[in-house]
Length: 335
Ligand SMILES: NC(=O)c1ccc[n+]([C@@H]2O[C@H](COP(=O)([O-])OP(=O)(O)OC[C@H]3O[C@@H](n4cnc5c(N)ncnc54)[C@H](OP(=O)(O)O)[C@@H]3O)[C@@H](O)[C@H]2O)c1
Image (cartoon, rainbow, N blue to C red; front, side):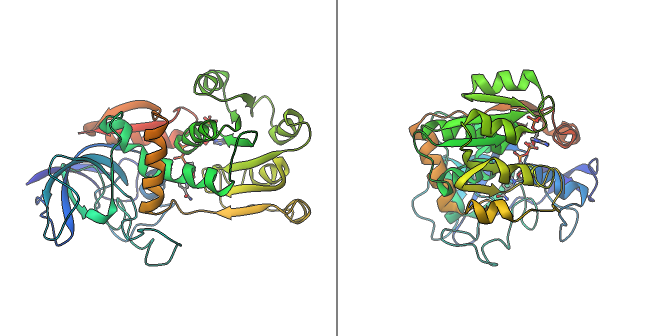
């Protein structure tokens, strides 16, 4: 039997330690010895019922990293002991989003990362870059893939302007990718301490959105009235209208987040007049993760981990993320 943590109900404190049967690899699968997990807002949304789960108990946490412990029949190209990342939506190998591609999600419909072992399709793996440890690697599948898709969608290049909202996992990866593209990064956050950390992480221009609630006007001022080529919408209803206003003509408002609501009243005129690209995104494919990992390896990007919790403190890690505004980058859990 293996040790695991289960979420027993859609409640932020409903965690219990459990002994579960050791998984064995099916055809085309590998068994991973998981070493670390990191939280995404999605995990909190599942644990509060905001994102409905098909059933409880479940082994939570979508993202993780580990090493290959066993190979199933027909698995080629991987060997026991290799350090790997299992993608969060293993059905989605590449190409366009389809209902089948997003039907299976780790930590929701499939076992997540708070267990000693898990069986996953070998086709859902990416290799962990050599310069990263397991905790840093566990930060990649959802947040880095999403940030990568944002910078690619907006076709950032030297001289482009990217606006990043807040200092959560997705925003900080997008900051690192935007700088790797040679873009100017404008980051808005709630505190001076976080803005200082964002500057150290490479942000060029900083806005305190508590002191300057009209951060969209500030973006226009900072860009000589032109606006941003990319606004990465990680927040949701509370900021969406300002994101449309902050975008340049032909710019991309890459819409991923719902930490501040999902229902917004929107003036269509900025979208029409500025011919904006309002692009939705649902994480991405294994191929997108692999591309993000290649960029991270090439630019030796190091994921920003704010705190590491022991698996026994899982409820505290969830509480920290759900409090919002306290963490910077990613929160991790090790076991
Ligand atoms: N659709 C997709 O492809 C996809 C993929 C990944 C994540 N997501 C979603 O994207 C969102 C962000 O994910 P995450 O994991 O990065 O979350 P996170 O780590 O919890 O970060 C959220 C951050 O949002 C910032 N924030 C909150 N209210 C704000 C406001 N009014 N203005 C500006 N910033 C604000 C805060 O930053 P400060 O403390 O610095 O102010 C907070 O730390 C979540 O809703 C998540 O579910 C979607």
